[in-house]
Length: 148
Image 1 (cartoon, helix red, strand yellow):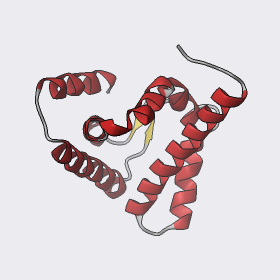
Image 2 (image 1 turned 90 degrees about the vertical axis):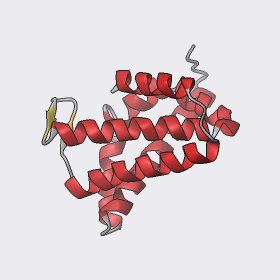
Image 3 (image 1 turned 120 degrees about the vertical axis):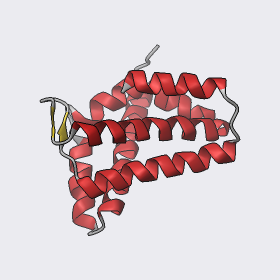
Image 4 (image 1 turned 60 degrees about the vertical axis):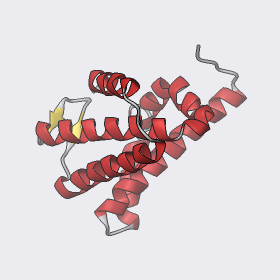
């Protein structure tokens, strides 16, 4: 998935695209990803390398990568947020599942809060990003940890 994201980023660097079109494309791509995840409820555990349907996993992963790349291109005005996420992406990836299981608990909380699986997937994404970003922000400010 990292390589697919790299290739997609490389392709989008070479073509010129309107920022509004990029934003609409990101919404469509992320919307399709959320629809596929909510509709199939495909089980994936990357720690154990278990997944119900690898095809659905690949499609949703590529749609997610495409959506993030297009969204990043569309919101270049807010580059400081993109730089923050990029600088601490490894920490966010580690925190969101391994030690704190934020993504798992956010998903459970979201599915308890709403009966709509689409809204639950979206809420899971928002809660996970908010918690991980907040933890990284506090660690950076309070403990003076820097990542170079």
